[in-house]
Amino acid sequence: MALEKGPLLLLALGLGLAGAQKALEEVPVQPDFDAQKVEGRWLTLQLAASHANLVSPGDPLRLALHSIQTRDGGDVDFVLFWKGEGVCKEANITVHPTQLQGQYQGSWSPTVEGGSVHVRFVSTDYSNLILYVRFEDDEITSLWVLLARRMQEDPKWVGRYLEYVEKFHLQKAAVFNIDGPCPPPRA
Image (cartoon, rainbow, N blue to C red):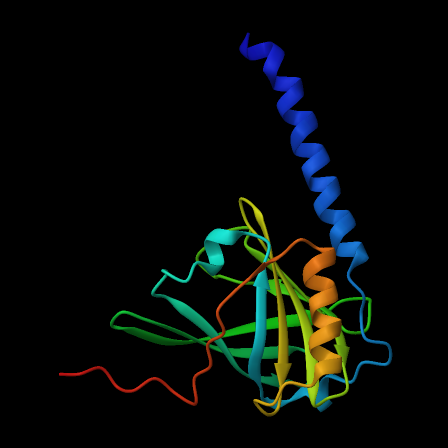
């Protein structure tokens, strides 16, 4: 019986991976993207994910993108903050340019072997930004984020973003922003 299920599991896994790759190929990239123009502070206006358990309102741990920086050589750094019950940590994720302009790749965790991250700058006018982030480890997780330099939502950009949320069947999430470094731990 187990031998009979083996090929079916491989077929299902193969179809799942093919579907995930197709989804990545369907994600557009900003033409003539200039990474240096996205440097600086960003605020999250909208957030959605491919898995509902990642966006649960009951989850006390929140991830906030604080800023984006570029490095010589074209690498891009994302400064993030994790905040939750008694926890506040800063994390930096560095991604490297790929062959496609506006697309980057790297590791999302030095402790998780095989954990990779793909980032696509989907659309931007450099005051607003739609960002696609795909995490891969044992499973594939997609995040879509609408960012802006100010907390004021532009209806045009919200509309574009919501089209992607619908097209890729994403779960909307609560938005979280943090102003700066975590406070020092209490003694």
